[in-house]
Amino acid sequence: MKADCRMDVEDSEGSWEALGSRDPVSREAAMENIRQEVMRRVQNTGPAQENPSSPGAAGTCPSDLNHMLARLLMLSQRCPHADVREKCAGTLQSIQDIGARIPRPLGNGPSRFIPEKEILQVSRVEVRTQSIFEDAFAALGRLDNISLVMGFHPQYLESFLRTQHYLLQMDGPLSLHYRHYIGIMAAARHQCSYLVNLHVNDFLQVGGDPKWLSGLDGAPRKLQQLGEINKVLAHRPWLLTKAHIELLKAEENSWSLAELIHAVVLLTHYHALASFTFGCGINPEIHCDGGHTFRPPSVSSYCACDIANGNGAMEEVQGNHQVPEAPCEVEVLMEKMKQLQECRDEEEASQEEMATRFEREKTESMLVSTSEDEETLPSREVSRHFEDPSYGYKDFSRRGEHVPTFRMQDYSWEDHGFSLVNRLYPDFGQLLDEKFQIAYNLTYNTMAAHRGVDTSMLRRAIWNYIHCMFGIRYDDYDYGEINQLLDRSFKVYIKTMVCSPEKITKRMYESFWRQFWHSEKVHVNLLLMEARMQAELLYALRAITHYMT
Image (cartoon, rainbow, N blue to C red; front, side, top):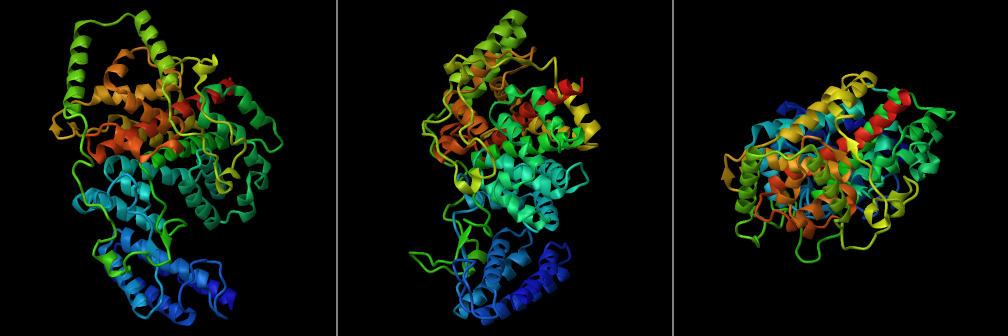
């Protein structure tokens, strides 16, 4: 009977996939099939169990039913099609009406930092965002919390999803299960259980061997070899040399250069995405572990009709998420930008002075504390996917160590990295370049309530500060501007998010740019994520280039 039950689940998978159709008639037919199947299971099984693996009555599959109910809950809140949301909520209500227990969401929305209604209203007023959400849902069968938060910036989201789809699903040097496993390894370095869990599910879905998930030592030797590059890239990328590449090429199960390019892009993508995940306070997906519970709420009864009425969130949309401490914060920053522009027009510092300012800023960036919190040890669920958990970012200058200077004029993405990626992983270099360009140039010419503002100076300061922390220098940039534009609390946030994102807290998120909109803070996080990815990637690609020559 257990095998028959599993077969029923597989047979019904087509109905779930059809919910992503743009044809409302197809969606309605699929939803009716799902409703009938779920009601049949509920009547045969009885009340849902909190533990998905707990045994049910003879001939039933409670774990499968729980999974279906959790999936209905997710769709009732996250499906971009209103008709599916309403019908899923109605089905859950019908189940509750006959006395069966239904799941309820844990947490308030996609982010712990941003009110749920503020995130969800974006797609209801932005036609382009809604269209992107529908396409993503049709391709993946879900609309994840990262995409929902990125929905504030549809131009970037479209490029991000296109790039990630190519990286994970299109033809490439690495097999699909290898790609997801490398994503797990990368996310685990920063203890990012959200991304680890997402890719554990995807890994199994594409036929990955469950034994690999018991720990890195259960994976093939070829993947284990990536452990050293994974940890160095994640925490101290300036230490990566061609010697690391030589080791991967010398082993019995050696990596081809094309496979290696694919692997380092995956590693840097998920290190950076872990930063974004923590920086935006991304919550677990509703249908995944930690996203829902079958236990009743402790205070008031939970009704499925609340889902359809949009009463799931406790917070209301607020234009300004908190009362600002500094009444003129935005104006002060705008005035500094104006003054710096005037100074640029009047005089230009010498190359010697520019170099001195860079070294000073690089040294000072090492002294910025990432967090006051003590080190936290990763859980076994996450740490089993990588080696040497004690290895992390360190404040090198305090230990008498020095981060060497990487001159962008000697090895840049535009002149060197782009062509190497495109040669060994055809077409992907172009996608990656477009994503970098969109993130760097994205602007609405606004700052809080002010319109018609040129923010290029501020965006460049943020991008270059991150690269400066990694020892990367642009000869034509005056690093003295960074201290003028980025205050201490902002620098602490940037360094923590880029170097130790697992330490980000809501207090840190709220402590910088207190008068700015949440969408502007998400914009900052996109800049930080892409600048970090490019910095890591440059060190990796330079090492591969040195190996090749």
